[in-house]
Amino acid sequence: MRKGSAICFWIVLIVIGVWAMPVEAEKTERPLSIQDCISIALERNLSIKIAEEDVRAAMDRRWQAGAEMLPKFSVQYAYTRLNEVSFVRAGSTFMESDEIYELRGVLTQPVFSGGSLYYSYKISGLQVDSAHVRKEVTHQDLIFQVYNAYFNILKAYKLREVAAQAVKALEGHRDVAREFYNVGMIPKNDWLKSEVELANAVQDLTRADNNVEVAESILNTILRFPLNTPVNLKDKLEYKPIPHDLDQATAIGLRERPEIQDAELSISISDKSVQLAKSGYFPQINLNYNYNKTGQTVTVDDDDSWVFAALANWTFFEWGRVWKQVDEAQSALNQANFIKKRLIDNIQLEIKEAFLKLKETEKNIFVAEKSIEQGEEGFRMSQERYKEQVATSIEVLDAQTLLTQARTNYYNALSDYNLAKARLERAMGRIK
Image (cartoon, rainbow, N blue to C red):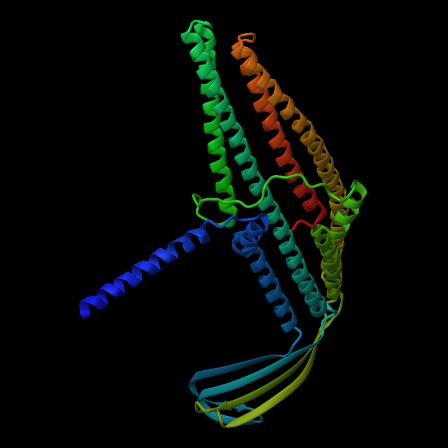
């Protein structure tokens, strides 16, 4: 009975294991779309983690700046040993002792600081907003990196297919040339040329295989996967026209680019910094409340006293130090305005370059498509003519070279178009 139960137990385990294996394989080899890769990168990439920590640090600084405007509480406990018995003041009385225990509590509330606390808090709040905007910049830069890596893999796949097609075609031509040579229809040199061209094509295929591995490793690095993780992509290289002209793209970029938002925040921060520097012209006023207990024992219960005071401190002459601080802050504000103007000029140029590149690659796609049709027909005719011995081996090899180049140009143009489209969307500030 026990033996039968044990056998059933192991059978169940084996069945469960066999059933689970295909599920796990499907899970690890699930095709990834471009949006899948973007989601994984935004979740795992270290650049995003760094940007998130930058936001968190800015929020902590804002909290610290706000705490400076609130009352502060402190407690001090002291023990003093004298070399001889002396009369010591304890609040409103005197006591005779050589040991003194003192407990002091202090409450301080800033009342007026010339605006330094207020503007420090406002600056720290703007820095939080700036950290969020910089995080968005990091997001968009990372998304563009994913697009770049993804489309480079798709291009590498297609170029490997082209290289494999060239090898297959040249193998067929080599076989025909060898048969012709064996029956004495062509000289040995023609057959050897086909062998050399086939060897070159095999080397091109090896390079294409390496390019695929490198491209896959780049995407794995961005996604923080192990370098040798198998890559299975879902999307394909395809042509999709854009709905914007250059003027529309420029207007969108100037409105939505997060870098411009960050530049505007920098101007606001610099403006508040000027006001912060001007606070040095004004006095500092604080309210203090001190409570003291003094005694000859650890419990300090002999006498107590309290003091409430309003303190004003005004340093009105420092040889122009505050004046120069204000002047320095004003220069920083001027720089922030100039930086924004320069950024707008650069963004307009970036959008125009990306748009023109997009249009260039768009035209190249249609030209390359036509070249492939002509190249395939030319290669087919050259093969037929060679079999009838009305064309030379060189003509066939030249036709194959032109066909391979036409296919390569097409996939390069298609990949460049998709990358230019992604670059334009990044320049417009709306890549997703």
